[in-house]
Length: 114
Length: 112
Image (cartoon, rainbow over all chains, first blue to last red; front, side, top):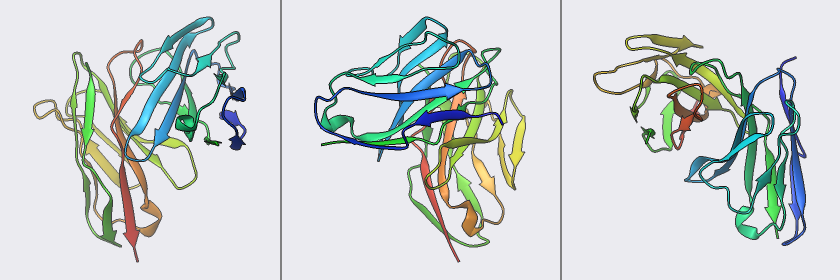
């Protein structure tokens, strides 16, 4: 089954404790992206990657890191989480063949930073 | 830059009512347009899309027509059901090399 898998589904942590949210896709997609969703602000892009070893900042990259060492994985790293990073996070992927390709989304990670 | 503006919610309708969610866009090129839906507790999934002017996307009773002259892609459904309660996002993709641009989402609640 074609899917984007992100883990964990729920995470509660404390300020300053490094964490990683994993994202994996099994569709051989070139493009992968991370979003955060907050009430009243919609979806905001954090980082995206056009292919292996190619990453770019989105609209809200501060406080986040990503890496794309393999095509299928695109982890999101919070080196020193802060309470304003409490949010619902989504990973997504799509093929990179044109502008009409749909995005496939993971089920989301609800992060709470205390 | 590219942008998408959609009507703010929440929208509350009775079952079998007619639904319209407005979406307008600004783009430099010739974008593809999308509607994504997010059901409670889930990630977004594609509802429908249109890739050129005057195209109509349709799925699950929802429709949207790509109107270049008014730069709009309004979502419509003739008779909503309780199961349509979700958040709806309008989005555009200007090229294969740029990220999708999303609207802020419109929450729809349908009551029996």
